[in-house]
Length: 434
Ligand SMILES: [Zn+2]
Image 1 (spheres, rainbow, N blue to C red):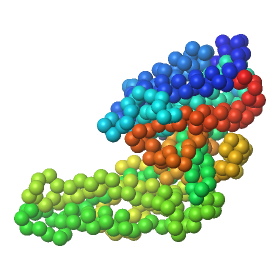
Image 2: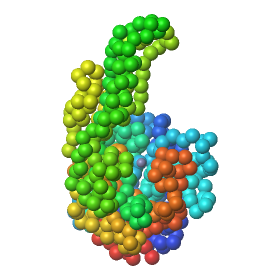
Image 3: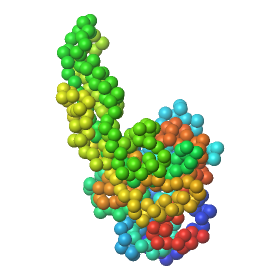
Image 4: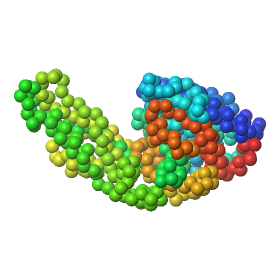
């Protein structure tokens, strides 16, 4: 598929590459792919046009109209397991009134690019696009296929995106290695800098819990109503921690960070147990009627090694035999190895790019597309590198107001990401960039 570009064999000047990729980021932010409704097709149209203009064919697939997924591939000669560069093109909704700048304006201000998706995760999508183009221009021989996947619907559970591709078009996205979101940022902790590389993520088990009780007139209260029982159970769930289980990966991460299991902060506690969080409660329909039924949706998350059944069993111990538990949706946890050539390559380059900092393996309490690609046998790492200063409220920018990415930190990440990918493809930097 390298066709035209192969004959040109042009190296890309690094300086202009930085400007090019920054403009891809801004162009992607300006495309409003808020999910719901998604409308990711406007992003895949943009990507397909840029790739196509330089001779890279892409496949665009939709499970539902406008919910487009794009996959492109540069063929390698070496026969090693393919490397897939993975991103999602959808973003979460914004509350415009709470933003300092337009959420889809991609303004450059205060040293940052502002807009929804600046961090999660159009920045990495822009890097992936730039790298594919630079490789095609250079007309180089790759030691393995490199795949770019830019998919829909990650922010709503991946049903129309990675999960759809994995279940219905596995040959397109089967890779040995995947580089995806949720890692590679600067974590400032105890006066030191760390770069978490995600190697594991939790699964989810969404459960609806329903209780019944005698209905009645609101003028005659009773303590055994469905609402009272449910409130009691929800309070009990929130008060009762689930069993702590420290996986070997987390043991290593906590040791590296100098955190002790018994006084780990909440983020880390969520990496050491199954969890259940009440998120939606429903009961009642009239102000003077005591309803006979009340329900709550529980967002359950499972550690690697756990199953929906094991989470339900643990939940039963807390709520007892009475309430009805109905599983609404599930996805499995995933865990890769941190003992691989690619992980070591990433860690080596990260620590060279920010002297004194340390790369660490870690687990995401949430979910990404990686869990689905991992089902096809890929080792997936969350690595979307960006250097962040200690005063930047990085965690709050994920899905938060005023999402933005520092330009210098983004370009630092672009250089690091490029060096790692080229090295893994067996290419000297100077063969692709000048
Ligand atoms: Zn994301």
